[in-house]
Image (cartoon, rainbow, N blue to C red; front, side, top):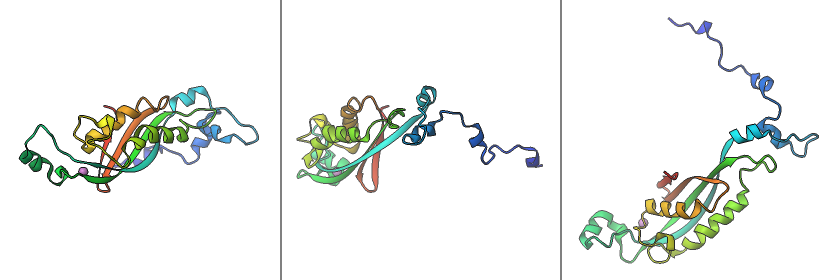
Length: 182
Ligand code: NI
């Protein structure tokens, strides 16, 4: 038997307008209006927002393990083991998170994140050979997995006070790896 007729609706249209407290999150958007209201510290501490910056670059690599035989490398890595290198057009999505600053309305100024990602990552890898020229990849097999870990190690301390929440690194348009610091 159904008893839907006895259930109270979980959400009544318009109810949020009556119950929304003064000094709510949305008041932070009213700067420039007649009477701007500063976001209450309590609510700003609760609201964690993620923001993502996307950059694109290309790089060359050879995926192989020098500790293994030529035959074993060829069996494991196939075309990626080409001794004369090959390249990829990478797309990197950098997601940071934090509380919304009541003065700016920002988690962090995206201009700053853009500069940090350019300085710490793109300048070191764009048009470079990941096996030979990128300090934070030295001594690692330059798989997409190891690449995202290397990028995390240089970016996580550099984006403070925002917290690096997630990296998504696309090696082709059909595959990507994700890392969140665990
Ligand atoms: Ni490759």
